[in-house]
Each structure stands twice: as C-alpha cells, then as structure tokens.
Image (cartoon, rainbow, N blue to C red; front, side, top):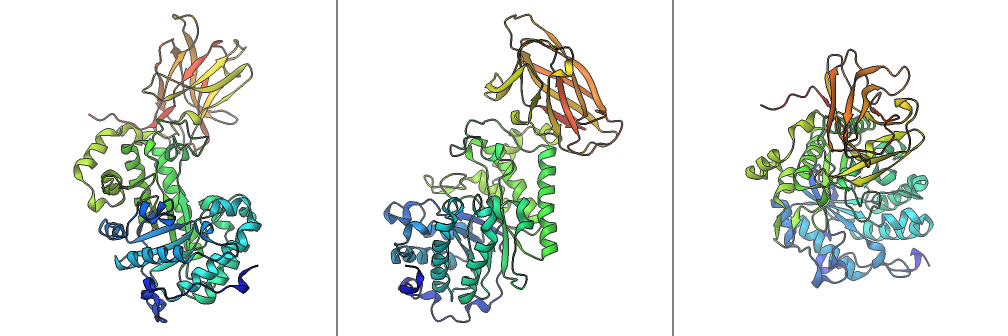
Length: 502
C-alpha cells in the first residue's frame, strides 16, 4: 500500500517547536551558501545514539571553524517501515540535528543519500523517494529558509535515463508544501559536470541550486580507496602540475559558463582527497579546488567532517589543522602552511602532462605491459615486456599525451626514470625519445636519443618549440621496437619553461 492510507508523523514534535506556527518563515531572503562540510552520513547515531560520533556541540564548532552550512547525508530508506513511513525516532534525531545547526547559525542541507539503491533499481526506488519527500517536505514546511532540500545524491547507472522524470516528480511534491524553499539538484553520472547540459529544470522555478561533485583526478583523490578496485592499489600519485591546474580552471570555467547561460547558482556539493594521498598533496589540492570555486562564486561543501577524507579528528576532538587551513585559509596555522610548501616540489607546477603511470599507453605487437613495484620511493612503475627486436624502433612505443598547450618559444624538457630489466647486468640500449604530434604528419617538437642501462635512472631530452600546438595534440614517445628485452618506466614528466630555484 502506498501513501494514501497512513498519517504523516506529527509536524510539531516537541524538539522541533522552532518550526511550528512560522507560516511566513520562508519569506526572508536566503543567504548564499559559501563554505560548508558534509556530516553524519555514516554515523552510528542513527541506529544507536549512544555510539554516535557526531554530537550536537559539533555544530557550533563547525560554525566557529569558518563554515556557514552543513550538508546532512540522510540514508532514510533504512528507517522506513513496509509502507514507507519514516520512523518517529529517526525524525526526532534529525530534528535535534537541524535545530542545533540553525541555533549555531548554520544553514542545513537535507540530502537524501540512498543513491546506490536508487541507481541500481529505479522502480524500487521511486515510491520510497516520493514517500520520503512527501513526509519530509510536510515536516519542514515552516522551517526557516536556512533549511534546504537535496532530492538525491549522485544519480548514476540506471537513473541516468530516468533522472529528469524522477527529479520532476519529487520537485512537484516538494513544491506543494514548500513553494519557495531552495532545492539542490545535480546531474547524472555521480553529479558530473560533464552532464550539466542533460539536466531539465523548470524554467520558472528560480529556487533551485545546481550541484556538482569534484574528485578530479580520481587517480589522485581516491588512490588507495578500498571500495574502488581500480584505485585501491594506487599510491604515490601527485597533484599540482601546470596541466592539473589548467584542467581545474577549464573545468570550473565550463561550469561557470553553464551557470551564466542558465542563470542558476552553483554548489560544489562534494570534494575531497583521501588520507592516502598524503597530507601535503591533499592540502595543495584542497586549497586549489576551494579557491577556484570561490573565485567563480560557487558555494562548496567539503567531503567530509568525519569517517574518511576527514577534516575533524574525533580522537583528538579538534580540526585536522592542515586540511582545515586549506579550506579556511583565514584560520590556517602559518607553521603548517610553511611545512606544506617545503614538502611540495616546486618543479611540479611546470609539468604539462599527467605524471602518472596510468597515463602511459603502450602500442605494438610482440609486447605486453603491467604495473609493478619499483625502486622509486615505493612508487609504481610500468614494465613493458618486449619479446623480440622488431624492424623499426617505432613498431612498439610507450606514449603519453601532453594535455596543456605548447606555445612557440616554450622551453620543453621531457624526463622519465627507466631501465632495462633483463638478465645481462651490463646491458644497454639506445632508444629514440621524442615530443611529437600524435597524429599525421607526426611533426617533431623535440627529439633525441637516450641510453638505458640496468640501473633505474633519469633520461631526458630538451629543446625549444618552433611552433605552437594545442593541448592534447602532442605526445611524449619512447620508441622501444628494437630494444628486444623488458623495460621498466616510471611516471613521465614534461616540463614547460622550468627554471630551477636558486
């Protein structure tokens, strides 16, 4: 039986008297969202409050820490009965959290977070999602404008095709009782910026915030993540190259242009880098993402307060100062900022490719390749198993694209650590190494030859670009067709106009 036969939970629980009798509560102009943090998604407080990590006092700590909103990740389906009625105990817990956030001066986003269930089984999800918003919208109809609704986190999978219909039917339910409440809606493919154009939003409804999530590049932000098999064994990936920073700016400019065309405010609802990325690199990435969003007027919500990607240390009962300072620079510890600067190689800012093992593409017959552990401070290398010498050096090659633009007159350097992995400890091989166009006429930008030995050591070519090339049209290439024995390669580096610090 669906929603016609049950009574909604009482709208005015004793704990939520703040909302009762406030029929005009939504008439105040809502302040813009600026800096926020995701909270309580995976906290035991929902099932056993005595074991909960998050406490109501943390709301004031968040406000004092420089944030203006929280995004509450609600896994509500587990707290519904067979007729999709929300548990009164669950609502009471939620009311306590909402009231604590409002009392602290925070805005509160109520984010329905059962995205995995909904993306795997749309027919089973739809009545639950509709029931959830029918109840929650009625329950908070008189809440202040500081309370926002987010229909569903990160639709993907089977929801990709159905999402516009699903969001429309839930938005209609919300608008019946909350005609002007701000509602957060994002695109498909896990709220991907590349899917913004697929969103179909009612033109007349201007109380919608459009959200996207940003974890780019995943090889960096999710390295070592146990729940993502393709990244679980990755380590040592860095961020901060010239290419990385140019990609960030281009991505956010795309979003800004979309927002201006569609006259929609933007919220970056999630971003963060896992602890396994290393604290210094996490700080660099986090600061760059937050500042790029703020420069374009986007609000943001960091992922997350507790659990993993953390900005609050529950054991120490305080901020993870390095990450907190990257998010809220006005409260940064100068000593930590200086330590991070010392820990990051300044040369990285001149790198114009993706300096990761996964960026290599090996082509040609008579070869196979796989990632292996290597001698470089625990980082991974690529082992190319060359079974025999071929007629031409270019018959087998390891190539990686240079994603940033190259301008006429740019001084270019390309470097990789490499060695032969054969039985003869005295073996050597001369290998052509080039920066060249990746398609006909394969114009050479910089070329040379390097000598490989059985010792892993850097090999390099350099030169000046005689003409300009658009990003993505030039490759770094090692031509391996005549080596005839296995070769081990590190991540590649292509630097533009690098001047070593004195």
